[in-house]
Length: 275
Image 1: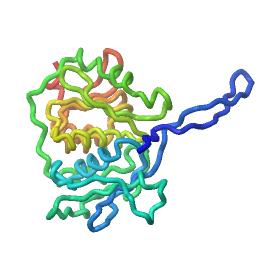
Image 2: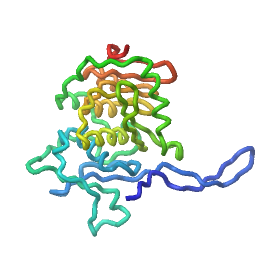
Image 3: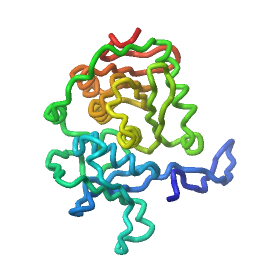
Image 4: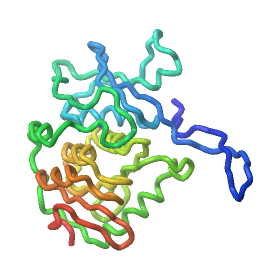
């Protein structure tokens, strides 16, 4: 499968009153349909950057509570339906669940069609997350502030597609010593985190109870909801969290860090984990 994470384009640069054309790279944005194979049923359609689509689908199902473990997924594949335009085969992911698993999709309150704008696809309220009965994240893990300071530069240095396009968000997974373990990029910050969680799920590494997640931009409801589902104890971002993100962090025991830039950051919840 071609990754198609970037798309060539011609742009006109206006500089000092002069116009010239040049070639540029754009972050690719295409729809991904996530659907169950038997019986065939569309679960969601999201706009994303192609690449790590299986991880994105698995992470989405896990963070939304549709599946509970790696074994719930029997098979993941791209669509090979002859009735579907060949160019769209890689924009449809079919999921076959294990026999006997019949999830209730009525609890899936995410918008059916989502955009890459973070937050559009969030659930309606904190109460919807409470109803899923996630336990609070265990305490005990601590990290020094010096390690937290190092995370933004490591995330930025690993954003290979951003270097070319300038138009992608990223979600990165670190250990408590600040070592970068995994990073995923996407036009949607929530999609990047789904890819990150899906990768851990498919490798049977959830819950992420001894890991740190860092996202580019801000921390929204969507980011904290997914982090709660994956058991992430520390969530960092380079910008501000939303009020609802802070409420989730406090209720479920997540250390939430914002405005992480240079040797300075704000802690909005869970200060006890920072040495």
